Image: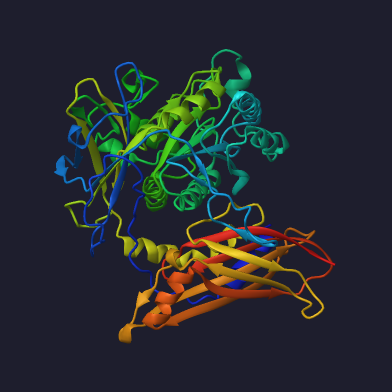
Length: 559
């Protein structure tokens, strides 16, 4: 695979990247109680989207809050709520793709749901025994569950691996997990102390500098993948420990995504109602010392990447539900528990620690994220200084507990897109790997035509939805877009894909642009000359203005 990556990068690094345009986040507005506002995104503005889970004193989800019941604050200053939407659990609508002609595939999402659930099996952080226990518990959960909301399963290895895409079929998910075998890794978790005593040891993060960087990069990739789906995403992270705290600035500021009644933002983190105040040490010290104290590096080495990852998770409306794979064990892992709590609290999720019933924790995570409110606002502070800005949501109704993300980093969108542009070849290469998840930021259909008497090559025609592209308005009323269209074919040797890469530019008159929007597709075509055999195809489209990616998979048999 390393050889394939190097070859891919040599091809893709030749792409001359253009300057990125400012990207603003939008959100779906589906159901009741909507406060409409001017949705035109203005220069130097950023739409901030905050999902809020509300419960009563007994922990029951509340679905009757009104816009007047909630107040939004940023760094302690009241903000004007531009949109308020309630998302009930509801029924998942299945978007059927069975009407597609033969040899046609699409990367359009197959479900329309107010919330999606992602199970992440972490094989990178922790040891083999805990990972085996997690797999058994996951199979137990899938054996007895009946899903009404879509679930996808990923594995965190040296790269992000999709085990199964979103589905409500528990049997299919169970089959995918049964076939999965975690990669063999050296046990860096066991210490001299843990071998010496079967009852009392002092555990810590079971990771190293390389795994820390890998974890952060793959989380960033997952966030960008999930950003292509509207609504809330509940990330159920099954891990023994997390390598680093993603929100040190928010902890230093005393921010927390938990609010009870009319008090907000100055509470400690919690897991299942347990205050972190009872833990030894402060969250800030433990979160940083867990990395600095092991001699593997320092927090400052990862500061920029940490900001990008945490901001990507929050922008993608991802709430982390941390499930401790270590369960009730002999190791004392206070530092990792604090990190789990902080990650969950600061993304609006929950943490489940010191419990052996991981299956019940998964079930609670799915249920918890099914009913929520979405609040949107344009920050009054237009200075993009890269600093963390805390969010507080207050309820005027007594006895209401609120959970939501702690805030966001005020990163300049233009600078972020420029940094992404510098790494876009590597990101595109990774997205085209045979076991990578489908990317849906750019939506398209692909018609795969096997070789024929007239044409001995495999022809792949991509029909791209122009509404998912960024067109630039030029002088004279012209609309301009530039895309990279790519097809990789994987045969028996998965490390050496056969590639067909190209660039398509659209420079359209106003009438042509409107006609394209009505037809709802922009076409590009790639051809490959393949030897007889069965091939897995990975097809990708890269918008060179925004660095957004769309990918899909297909199969072709060459006689």
